Image (cartoon, rainbow, N blue to C red; front, top):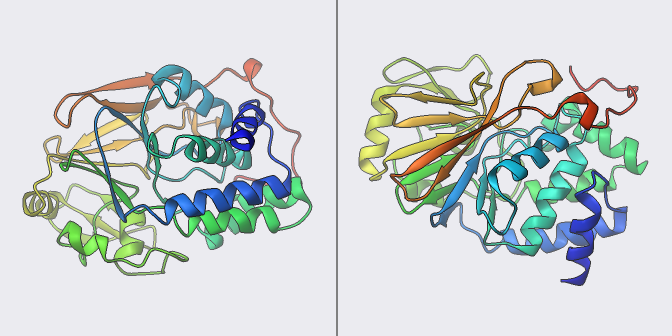
Length: 303
């Protein structure tokens, strides 16, 4: 663990690893993720977090608020990269913790953990700018391909980045998805990272152009079939950090405060003592005076 402990020290100061060391770290993580299930079982106590989007200093605030790993166990529901200034440092920070404490931190795949999306929303350009080539980005994409799809807490709280799919009725169907690769443009895997809840009954087309809008009836049916008490998901900015829907059977968790450094929202985490006993941590963005704001890049992050 000598290398990993040294990497943890480096990246917690918002520094990124040399290219060859990032490659080694990503290889370690890929070996760990190959052993994890599509629906990874997690036991309480555990704290559930939503999108981070490269906001490194706010991730540090998250850990100072909710507790450091391994003192606190975490599930991060994807969208670690893009839009923020420090996607590389943010993702590397999480990977070093995963390498050192693999059973204390669970990393799920978001819709941004793909080659196509990161080429548009900042992570590709950031890696190229910092390394001078695409190798670092490619190593991270190898990790993206193996990130697990969902986690289940004490067999009754499902955590997934986006939401439900009309092609998925049971968790066992989720377990059979071949997740090792780029997220498809349509189908069950795509839906799980792209879909959103809406105040409707069943299904409707999504304005995102991928996934679905899903309503209260299909949510209730899915939860009854799979004996679930709650669905946790991320994927949508909510100003108060948390938003419950469908008689509090579903909750959106958002963990990037003042999203894109301009939205003014607070952020949240949801800590589960048991599957039925939980409480929220609400936290604010780190003030500008306490963060380093990089010089304007030639490639804009906010497209």
